[in-house]
Length: 122
Image 1 (cartoon, rainbow, N blue to C red):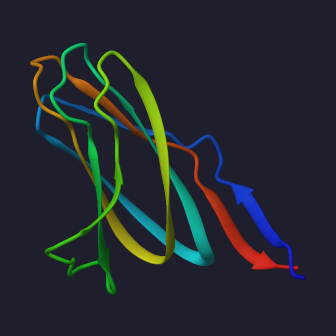
Image 2: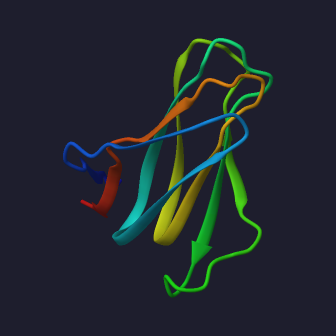
């Protein structure tokens, strides 16, 4: 049975912040891997009415993007919390959009953290 060769990208941490019901978007290019495990961290303010939603938009040429993305993760409704969820993406170009929850005028903190990449099987 083949064993996946997995490595973690260096100290990668792209962060952004947004108010209620706003988006933070990251671009992601997985160019030489079978798949990648992509962790997203969301820090919520105290009063929230819904959890953050992560949507993935794919492109075959890094110029033209899907107009309707795929929801890959939904964070639970929880105020004053730091939560982390991951999704798996295959080789390609992506926009990762994190739509923050509503209910609070305070800002949300969103981070795309170090990615685990499976590049081969041995």
